Length: 100
Image (cartoon, rainbow, N blue to C red; front, side, top):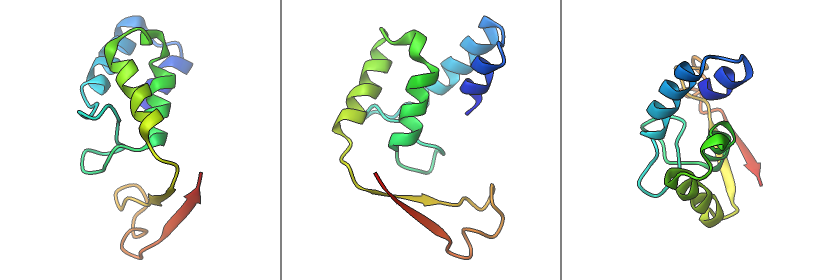
């Protein structure tokens, strides 16, 4: 995730803030974040977002993300290979199930 990379590499505050604002706008109405616009929010993306944006923990969007995670049921998540990232994987139907 870009925000984590900016944090880890010591990017300027203005660069981090600009990227943060853009990502915060991607938060769904239910409080979660999704990896891609066409996907549903998921616990991994929401959780890693909250880690990256921990400095904003007192903001309402942060609390909505925490509440989304608390409501998300434990289940088997499907990690689907996106064709744009792993050419041919999605077309071949490759999937990985992870029980959490």
